[in-house]
Amino acid sequence: MDQDVVKIIDENVNQIEGLIQQKVEIWQEHVVFSPLWWMGVGLSIIPWIIWYVYHKKDSTDRLLYSGYAVMIMALILDVLGDQLALWHYRYNVLPILPTYLPWDLTLMPVAIMFLLQIKPNVNPLIKAVLFALITSYLAEPFFVWLEVYQPVHWHYTYSVPFQIIIYLIAHYVSKRNDFSEIH
Image (cartoon, rainbow, N blue to C red; front, side, top):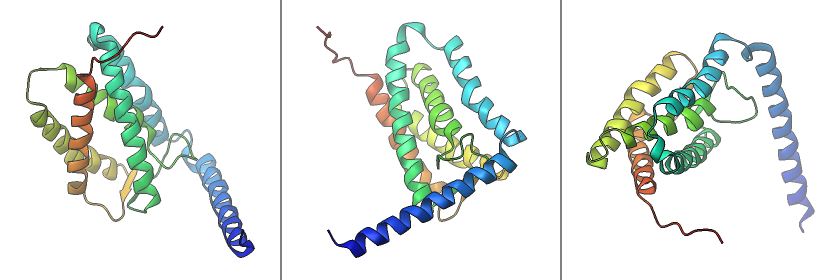
């Protein structure tokens, strides 16, 4: 193995570790227990409680499969966007994750799960477009206004096709019934 490459990689890792430690210190001193941090904690918990009370109980598994799929897609895309410097977040609930967990693990999946169960016979493309327009042109600007989300090299319109695809995949997952019993 080329020792110069190993040295460069190790130096880079050390720099990253130092920046993560600095980020944790900033979070501890300025973010945790701030009003926007508490909002993030509330947005991480309250929508799930509302979903638990109001979801169609006979569709719990189907909705959760879709919700988990949404979480995975949202987390992957959010990490990629952050790492590629397309956007970043302030007031994270947890300091070492480069995503806004309330959005990825609660708001998106819960909103989509509710949309899946409301008027299930409506064309999924219509629902997907509606979801994409609301999240891209209302939710994202709202979080920018709160100064939680900062698009750097990103425009709200770029989010629309991603949101449509995420919704359509969740819809597809919700319609699967090809499960065999575990023996």
